Image (tube, rainbow, N blue to C red):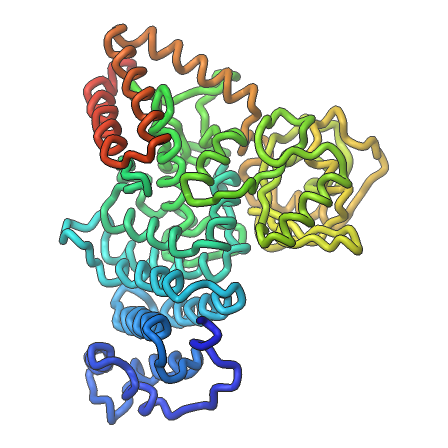
Length: 508
């Protein structure tokens, strides 16, 4: 379908002729944007016409290609008419549209997938909601969100976590965007327009309004290397809350301004409104997700296969488990042949793979990266980290496998030194890299300890009848989720939120 839409040998066409082939509505938009006539090109019209030429869209022959053409015209016009994007940002959005269409063609995405992705982005720029509700974000914020979400779907393997402990959800987003970019675009667009998230199964996920405002990395709408952009911030807040608000006891994940050096501003808030702390007594400034939680999030976002790889000797207890470098290679080869890359893989941040030098393994924590490609002939693996483009590279399979092991089982190599990686690692640390001395992804054991402690605190802080009511609701929620009963899920989530609002602050 997409190869019908984008032809390799399309001949250059006259801009005015190209505009005449647009739908009447799109022509009117172009005329309004340029404050001129179609027969007399203004700067806005010229740029839009050039963009249409660049996309090389041929004559419409099918409903599917007509849909993509219409969506492309709509987003292009919305971009150039928007008053909240600079000329440079409009140019960058044009480039992202073109690249997304090229990526869609390469991946053979359906016309419906392409149109839904483009239309979701247009809705942000237009500020339109189906129920004409008030907008959650300002027109400026929505414009920045539109620019960044289109960048992400066009460059899914270049998405970074920045100074946040969200390697987990960032890696998952890369996998989702590889197969279903429309899901991510629609999710971000819905949240940007409504201020809450309506999950695929009907659950209404309440989101903290401050967490949806662009933080220091996301402000301005630009996407910079080794920084998390606005769309990634909004996606993370929605996806993480979609997990935690369904748990027992339920929690809320928020992203506020950092309180000091080394703080990411992330917090996990318990049922009574208190900030959760870790086993060390310090406030948690990460989402506190283990591999099992990541798999659950992936399933909720439509990933049906086993996308996460972990070492059977690591404290993960979930995913496609491997116990040797050969086993890892075979798993990657199978996933690649089945079209299931990128894969998410559970690793240690203080392994020599990342630090460039051998150490004892007591300075980092568990982390996840993605694998984009595996060459079985050379034994080399291309990894995409969330630490900036310098850390996206090709590495030997055995080195990657070593990083999947707990530190006590690492290959003993005191003399190991990769000078280039060593310098990259320390530059990343100097830039304030998050997730290196914290647990971006927690172990199975730590997650179980956390949940046990949270349930005990809940019982100590609330009356037994409230705790029992909450437990009953959670059991009903699990049953409704198993039965895919969206109406019941929505009602139960509403009851849980009512209880939370009634008792939030009781533990303060």
